[in-house]
Image (cartoon, rainbow, N blue to C red; front, side, top):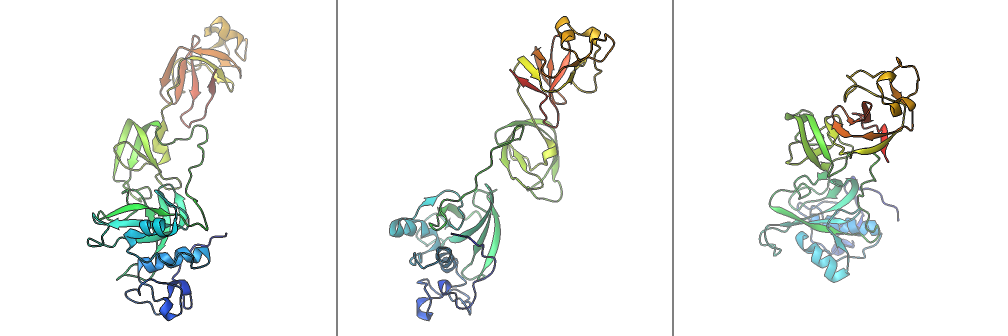
Length: 329
């Protein structure tokens, strides 16, 4: 079925949010303060039960009317609904309050997933007993609790059967794209969050690994030790290319050292095999390997990109921008 986000409070006559005693479908208690149009609000339980069934299109699961933290057991034991450890579209996010599920140390909280922004960010709709009848939240999982305080624990998400197990799946990385687990060199400003406006520190030429990625944000990368979030321009992939034979994908300069700051050699300075693969036979011409030239990388240098030391000189395998100029064979 189609899915439309809820970004405003349910209005008068919406029976999913009105008690049966007032002509509605809900078996939940009245909210506090009681909304004049939808009397199960303000209450996270009344809202989540109503919205879950509203998405379905009928009050198929009316008895999700327990304490919020106990929704998991009610969903499984009463209705056989599936619960997963990650947010699903249209599903009910469930948080426990305190150390028990008895309600003596808090009743917990529930919210509905309205949008999936990334693996670590969602957009929810919710309500709160003794608080507001309705609000939307952008929730990220930077604290492991999807934005709730230290007194709460995220228990899981109840899949909405009208939608199914629709959750965020990271797209396959494109060649050269940085992904979680990659070894990188970081060099630049550090931010306290992926969308912070001002830096809170900096780091210089540190080798580490990527631990989190917030795609689409201003500063999408975080690394081992949670030093801070970084711009894409501040994170460079370390490619541990092996020695051995490579093939040029373009016409490639042969230089005196690793880096474009080093001069290009002359054809006369190449080995006999190098001369046979040069674009020119003029001894005084710049030494340029033809596209498709096969050469042996005796040593790999990670400096201003990735460079190979060959019998004739130095050839760039991958540029600083991530562009690959040679492939391993």
